[in-house]
Length: 549
Image (cartoon, rainbow, N blue to C red):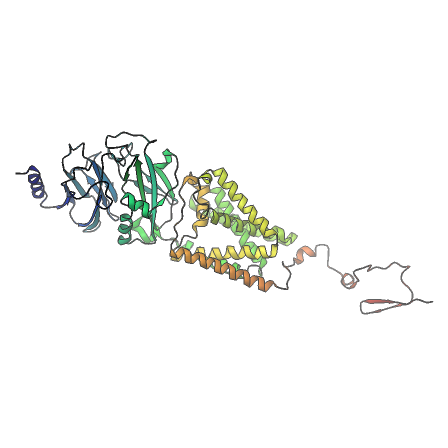
């Protein structure tokens, strides 16, 4: 009797009370893009599931087995009782089977364990990638992960960033490590915003399973030094899922790591953790910003002092929050309360400055600075995003400051139109960005990513690359339309009027203007005595002189 047949039968009897998955790899060969990846979905109900992989082709040097689940963590191991060095736990996990270590036996067995079941059954995506013995082994030079060979990635998140960790590949199945010879490329792929459906989750994982799929669907991440490559930082867009993939290359051989997925939040607490705004006071704040943004966009220059207070309040709040965020020991509440307090006082101070001096250039400069800050933030989050030379903080802030100064200079050419354009742009952005918190959208991250440059350590090395979906494109169009219409409305209202409102307090400091100064001629209002004749008469505001022979 065939010993392999006996072994399979014995396994089936042994796991009669649990599930068994039998896989035939006889038709899967390395090097063939059409037959080097096996993927299949299963509904798992048992606590332990045995996975038997049989009839492995002779030309397979090693394969990577992957297990993907949604939300619920599972353990993939080589034994029924997971042991350190041969098991992996998570939602996107995998192990490597080396033909040399198994003495070229065409059979392998793995076990999938549900540690803490959430539902009666879970959906499992089981994937096997087969490779030649000369292909680089993903995670073959593992130094810190729990398995001897770690073909998977670990995604961790904070409020601001997602950190994806992986291990260097080995040159081949022999375990040789050479970072200079093995090339590693990182890719990522965004899911739809606020899309936490299981169908979208698995569909996007399928797009990042093989080397060809990754290169076809993913976006390549800018290269960095070796130390940061295996602990890559990404800017977090909370509620937007992101698939991370790694490709290793050596000579003509290539291999793919197990893709990892993160939403930047806790999926089990979707409403509270992944959607914003969460707290009630933030919802009211967004509503106020929405209202004031619309008001300033269309009526800001007409109500000059009110707009001055809002702009100076925002300026003081922003600068204060950025400065105190450099200190890590302040809590979020402390930073928020301090920033709002300073902003409130700052707005009053600038109103007093306008009342005392009444000089437009002093007051409109704040609007120009805020406008320049918005333009610079937009520029370095879109066109100039993830440029290597800007990973140096000095280069970034020099370029950022230069952009602000350029906007100020351009706006100063015509202060009236510059002020109207600035407040229309700022007001429209504030309105649309606040609206994003209720319906979704990534427009607020134009400011948030700039804040992270200041507050988050090593954020200059993070991958920013913001997602761009249909809703984001629609919000950008809405922003542009609102800004354009706001400029038109305010310029039309200002036609035939003084460019800036007169400041009666500043102009009357030397005392009230008397009637004589208002009615006197512009030239020589006070005539010398020798010019005046005894015979003269006045008609209206004109002096009539007569000569006597």
